Amino acid sequence: MTLAFSSSAATVAVASATVTSSARIPTLRGFVSFRLTAKKLPLRSHGGGGVRAMSELVQDKESVVAASTSFSDAEETTPSELNHSRTFLDARTEQDLIAGIRKEKEAGTLPPNVASGMEELYWNYKNAHPYTFNPYHKAIREPFDYFHFVHTYIRPLIDFKNSYVGNASIFSELEDKIRQGHNIVLISNHQSEADPAVISLLLEAQCPYIGENIKCVAGDRVITDPLCKPFSMGRNLICVYSKNHMNDDPELVDMKRKANTRSLKEMATLLRSGSQLIWIAPSGGRDRPNPSTGEWFPAPFDPSSVDNMRRLVEHSGTPGHIYPMSLLCYDIMPPPPKVEKEIGERRLVGFHGTGLSVAPEISFSDVTSDCNNPNEAKEAYSQALYKSVNEQYKTLNFAIKHRRGIEASTSTVSLSQPWNESLSV
Image (cartoon, rainbow, N blue to C red):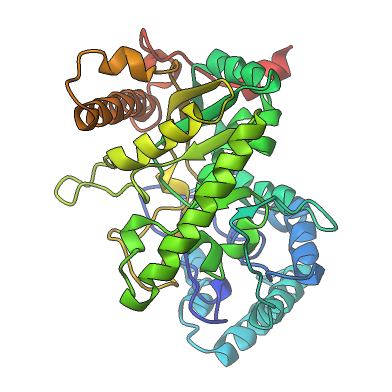
């Protein structure tokens, strides 16, 4: 099941909910109501009223979906059940949206508390105050806990029965190093806006420290797009302008470069203090599917980005380690097929399996010992990291998309489900 929404102006997510049909999809009555409100509406970037209302709705999702069939026991949906969502599919204006919410409430297809929450959140979002991110942004945990809010939003999108962590023991190893004062850098691919939350949630049972302390190198899209802002406010971010969008507006190129310089200085300062965990995707953006086959794969790394990160770690004066990490989670919040310049992309969200894997540390000196010059060494190290990320991704893909589960484990990637193991202890 997949739902779609747009971030254009204040018409927000409520106005657009799309269900993709298949041979068998879950019964929608009740469930769409929950998805449409408690898991897809953006919240205002400043102030807590609307955010708090949304959080309460999400926490109380059982009251919304109690009458609906569970995902695992889904019944085949009839055309009449699909038709009830046309109200929001057809909404094009503010008047359409508000009238549609009230219509569905009167028809009994939206519980009163959900309908009022949807309407309140729409007005809150429309009147949202701007929030400006500093080069280094610390997650806002009070008076409203945006970190918890992000988890509450993303958790119901993850099919934990079909999700896996690769080499969970290495995550424990790197956490130990962080606590000892070492710096850790995770070099990985980037699949969706939900990536940081997916990392946190898949490691929540085993290494919650990682999820709460990871610092994400974030492109400007996630701190300027109104739909992203509330979720970005709940993460630790080092804010940069992506190379993919550096030249979108020629008049802003100089400003973006200066901003990136400030962010690099912030990162250097953090690394000198030690005990830092930094996640960066050196591709400069989200992965995209092969246009011919539709298959997803990690986007190639920019060797210069990898090398800049390596040099920052080496020059920090603190022990540092670089690990290749792989993510598979595009289905729960896939990006547009192509890179878009304009802010306000159309979003899709769905309930799917996800995967996260990490491989042993890769040493620059070991990889580049036979290289003849710095440029060759830079390319070789970037390729070594990318190769590991790609290999891990293939294992995750085999486990999740090909439904091989734990059996997809290889000699280099041992798959597990830490959330199940913690329950069995």
